Length: 328
Image (tube, rainbow, N blue to C red; front, side, top):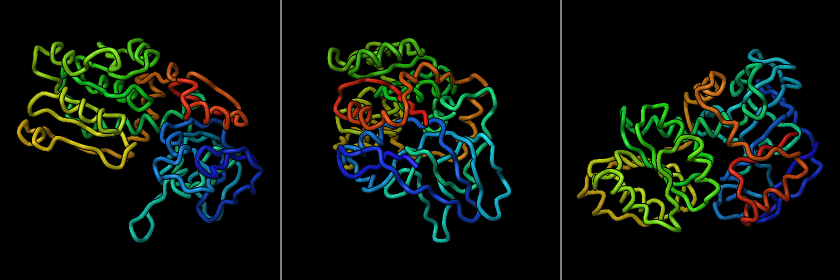
């Protein structure tokens, strides 16, 4: 089969690889659509330590089951499915994630997953839309850990895919006004089109002062930090009111600097969020039911063989696209 193989920083050629074989309670999926995640772009540069060469990345995908292993009862060949990348826990409480560390993922013609990981794809949901289920699940989980009340003012720091979806999830939860900050004019324009009430270009404006002015000097009720570096985290904290809540989704830098006295004296609550639990079927329902529209976020659809060039262009900043989906 064809696969994009991560062989080291800035190296992901298209290779011919042996096709995987499903074991007991596993299914073999013909990949139809797979999204390029920002975490894969960071992994491609070698900066995160969460991608171990050689391996196949890719964890946002959909496809059709081509064969099943022994004992499979939850799916059958021919089923169109939306798989979660989260494998079941093993007998010592550990779990693998598809396309992370050394577990091969879906930048390939085929991939094997456990039968419990697949949901049936509704007929009216395209394979491209279904591939957005995983990032939406992350955003929904983050908002489940963020105490947004009806009418609250929320800031989302970082207008990447997860940040945009967090904005939509915050609105779904009842946020009254939503501020989006980023340094990309293109992404901020998209955020406005998708419903942000106020966008701030942090390269040209003072986001903290603007947020304070927008909230009559109080600050926002909740902040969602979706970048994961020191300046973005500090910005999120300073935009939040006394007694407010900040949720960290961003996972770029291992170590950051935080003003501990600010957290303590202003009684800020900080919560981390990672992955998702029951939000995966919720995300599929939200897309299928029209509660969340992901179409505008998919800015480019390309064949798998274009993946090496697109990944390199994204990593080096030659293109600024919110979501690229590879068709297989």
